[in-house]
Image 1 (cartoon, rainbow, N blue to C red):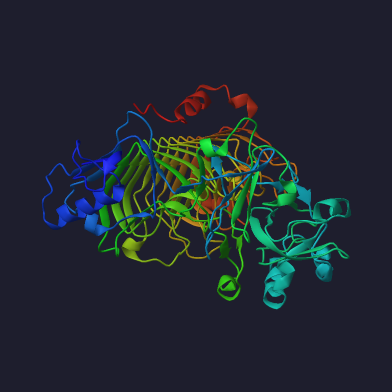
Image 2: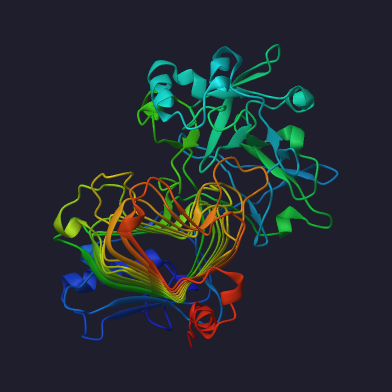
Length: 582
């Protein structure tokens, strides 16, 4: 059956009379399934070229599936680009003089515009400073005792969180930065603070100019002063910063977008899109015993999703009791959301698709999944990372533990643009998976993160293969990570024949070095062989933190400059790449 932007709501899905929405086609699939009118070849939905702006997420459950290997294939025409967008087209711009334009974009209780794209390019939000970062001057003045803490006093943080959560809700700015704070548009401003391995988004509650205190409306994971008194931060979405062509900001009270159009651009003649949906597709069976099965996406471009601003990992009830916004999460930002969710599903494929201009992670292969294939795709310009695989829950049972996913021949780049703690691929409490022949580059934090159990706690992460990946120029914003990062027990996990190179650390990042491979707390039962690692800025290529080295098998890894020209090193480098996908 066929879907076309030129189709009709009265179409029948034929080539001559196509549907005009994907939802129509999916409803027809469900009807055919219920009437058992499916051939052994399955169903093919061909989406003709064009942009399809979704009004809500496409939901595929077991009613659209078949348990007898009869597939549902959703594919593009491949003649031109087929885009599924979670964005909202903004038009009816009013000229305010010079190159300033304004348009009404109604917000809601759980959404307001946070990204804007003009003719395919993401436009910068008005911010202070215009480039780079500001530095804090320490914690809020009433909590100045934090300044004297020794590094990594996690016990003290826990006590403070239980007794004085307000200490996590602000900082002092530096005297030289008074100009930025004087007359600031505090009603609309958002602040991103860079800690060590995580970042926090917060809104302003009030300013105390006498003590240079910035009081924020939600807590961060760690108080300013825990890692350093001088943390990087940036102020975004402020009218005070709207001074360069291409910049924009959203006034939440007026419900209006202000856009300083580039020279010669007429916004009413341009395609201006604001991401609105957090999810574009949800493939989810009602339970592990009633899975969504045998669904394949081919050649589709998924674009434009929004990201959550109401999450706090360490104070989970915060947003139930406070009418405010903010985001605070652990390393890897695993709660930042996803454009596509796969849960309680089997035999699902994404092949030769593009995932771009996302506000969060692109794909989340959550619990209850088996035989998922993610091959030959391009992930780029991602708010967090590309792929989440598994769960933070180490107490899952049986088939709730996801297994047998293959992630192969994917290019993952330019990730962590909104949540710098996002990683290229995150795997935790999942088993018998393969991450092979991918290239991962240009990200804010680690390339691949394995495991989610600190120390000797229970872990379901096991029997995973990480091989022949090319990981480079990652960890460009944060500290204390690795090209490959491991955490906790990982029985029978193999890391082999990867090429990890050009791993550095931002000059303002606070914390421990970034390494080629970093074995963090409790990492064990991992075999690491025949990897090539070079141009690692840290003093050591491998790092071990609270790890019994005897429980990690190392062998044949090439780390010394004199070994890089050896035949075995050259062979590993040649094999660590995306294979020919034709």
